[in-house]
Length: 592
Image 1 (cartoon, rainbow, N blue to C red):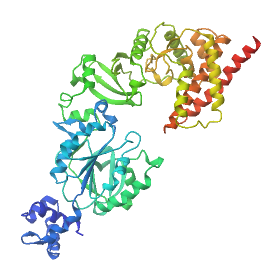
Image 2 (image 1 turned 60 degrees about the vertical axis):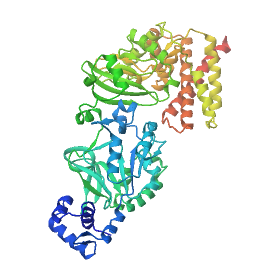
Image 3 (image 1 turned 90 degrees about the horizontal axis):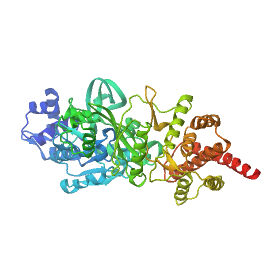
């Protein structure tokens, strides 16, 4: 085996056979005395003669030959919203080149042609790379619910002398080589404070500790390199950790840090601005001022045509939330701050966009939602005004509770209609069927609760009543309270015609109102004390809402998701108020 200095000399002579010792010193950043000493060692071992490398010298490089490269490209790149809603960050064009293509070319220029790309989010966008560059793709189906250690686990058998790369890095110069002496992590220097992962170094530049954040430190940035010894041990760790609940959210770097003393991984220093990782739109705009002008983006076209702004006005772009229903981001123009809502995958099957648009227009006209600007009912994207420093509604604040109930009454009294119906009972039965298809419901109280829901629904149906427009997702997180105290009700995806008490039911369950607060809320809603019949009717919808959302939670559990404490919150509301409402109805029936 070669020492690091011997390798440095032989590697230079392999690439540039006629190099002098001064050339070698300049190429390796070693002192001339160190080069002279290492050169003598190489001659003594018959690796070098007066003509350059011997056959033994050439053969001595073989253990250090790079086998392959793994490029990780599976992630959502959520911090790069809204562009990442349309395409993965690695496929963006920066300074005239697609990021991942530039990196593939740099690897191939270094003689590394065995390249594997791990894809997940919008995986089909990467398929063309197989034909264009003769690379191999591996699909990570867990890109949304597991961190990047899953990507390395899927290709663990391919780890050897391997470059580990990210698809969205931009290298000013080619950092890749055909031969590498040992494992390293690329790093740049932070002159001041940084939130990056900072490195503590021991003898021979070995990484001995990693801390998140620091000052005047070398920090991880860019690619890494695993030698065969590193790969063999890391493969064992990946297999040991895979499937553990506390490993799901970890980066592969977290696993390395937990076992750092088992590895001889060193730092590879790069000068400032050699490696670029773009964490936001503003960062890539600073690097490539023409980025937006050259961006082929339907989202930015939508924004510009709706607001009448120029694409170069758009700034301060960052994600707000990402979930099943919505992908939302903040952006600003010369005229203000806005929110762009992009429809989540599959939402066309869940949300009636025509009904949503009608509800949004009604809410705007009733001064219930001042934020709404425009929605495309065909494709589901929406632009709203952003409310700076807004807070969610506090249902246990008496004034805010009163405001929410008056707002609900204004909505329900609007006479507006949409072509969508909503019933807790019908929704609950649909969830129940889907849950039972995945296995039995283990809750011993379930059969009784299900039967109670059926009886209670019969009472409600017998009371009749005209359906009204309801929000149907009516709880604190969907209210925005401005610094001035103005209140907007947002997120109208599930709006539909139903029992006026639907919104009270969801609100009472999700905000965990006490019965005293429920009575106060209904007094605010009606502008008077509710009658006994009104009380039991609304209490029935609290019970049905709890039951409906509880069976939804059971379905999520059957599908492998965990709604956490909400499962119990829904259960307790359903169990409590199904019983109480039925008692009120049945006692009244018994005495009539």
